[in-house]
Length: 314
Image (cartoon, rainbow, N blue to C red; front, side, top):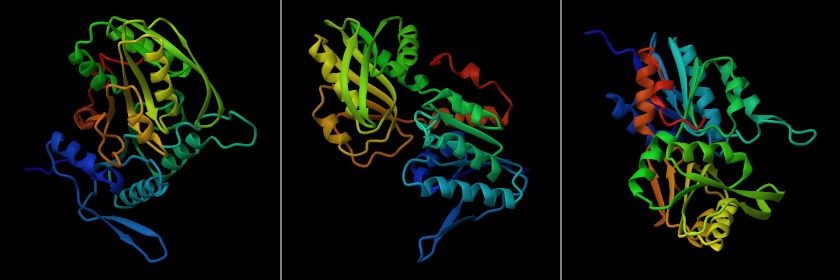
C-alpha cells in the first residue's frame, strides 16, 4: 500500500494538543527531537523521512518567543528535507495584538511575524480566532481562519440558560458578541472601557440592560483578566442573574488566575490553544483538536472549509 502523504508534527509547546489532533485525524504524531546546547541555542530535527509529504506543524506562538523561533526552525528543516507542502498550524498566533501602529515609532509585529513565516517557507497557515482579521492579509499564502464558535455555541446551548444575553467586554468585540447573539437568537450588551495604559482599565461602563439576565461574556483572549473580570463585576452590579466568560486563548498572565478566583463568574470556558499553567475550579477547557483534525482532512481533500462554519463570527 502507498504510504499516506500527511505527516503531523509538533513543537514542544503544543505537543499536548498535537497528539490529540493526530489521533482524531487517524494517525500518530511524527517523531522529532530538539537538541539543546549549553549556550541556549536549540536545533529541532525530524526523525523520519518527510520527502514529498504534506507536513503539518502544530505550534502555538505564545511567550516565550522561543516557541515562535522553534516553529521557524522546523519550517526551515522541513523545506530543506524536501517536504511537498509545509502547513503551519498555529492555534494561538502570538504578537497578533500588534497589528497596526497605534502610536508613533512602534513596530507592527504581526506583519513582521507573517513576513518571517513566509520567508521560512510556509505553504499555508491554519489558525483560530485571530485577534484582528486583517492579519490574514499580512500573508502571501492561504490562511484558514477558524472560529471557536463551532465549539462554544453548542456548549452554551447545552447550558439551557433561561434568560441568555451575550456581552462583549469592550467595543472592539462588538461584532463578535453580536454574531453569537444572532446564532443563539438573543440580545447582547457592550462594556465600554477606557485604558490608562496597556493591561490597565481606567473606567468601564455598560451599554444595555442585563437586569435578571444570564450573561455570557465572549472574547478572543484573556491575558491579565483585568478587563473581563471588571466587566463581570459591572454586569452583576447591574442586576444580572449570573455571568460567565468564554475566551478562545487563555493567556492568563500576571494575576489573572487570582482575579478569576475573586470574580463573580460561574465559570470561565476556554479552549486548549494554550496549556493551562495550573488547574482551576472555575475554568473549563474545551478542546480544539477535533476542529483542527477536520480542517486538516479538508485541506488534504480540497474540500470547503468555510462550509464547516455554520457558526461564524462574521
